[in-house]
Image 1 (tube, helix red, strand yellow):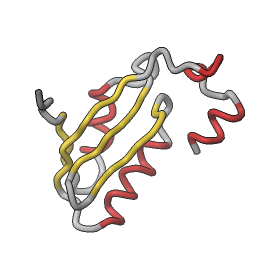
Image 2 (cartoon, one colour):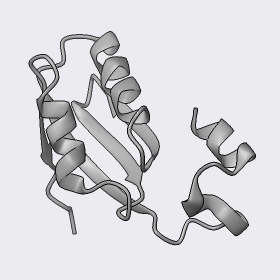
Image 3 (cartoon, rainbow, N blue to C red):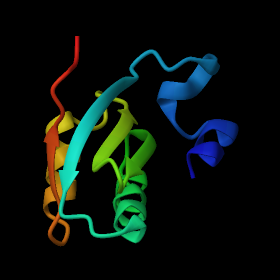
Image 4 (spheres, rainbow, N blue to C red):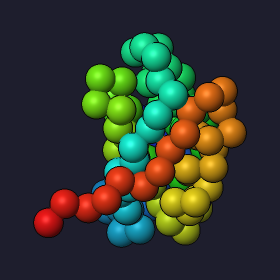
Amino acid sequence: MNFFKKILGTNPSQHNGGREAEEKISLEISGMSCDHCASTIEHLLEKKKGILSTMVSFPNRKGEITYDPKQISKEEIIQSINQTANYHATEAERQQ
């Protein structure tokens, strides 16, 4: 889905080949019981306006989301996951 946004230029944050407004969030996600759960979360987020890419790992219980903060907030991303089934997402602490 993000591939088509980039090629067709339907995502304003990607015009002129740049992603000036791009930010990343690392999440810890509990409640997943299989790889299908991770895929479900990815598909849920990919439908949201402002999500540029997703990668959710069931074995690691983590997610990496790239998004446009002008279109969606970290809080909205976390809330979207927490409102789905029995999943619970929190922002991962940054390692230094």
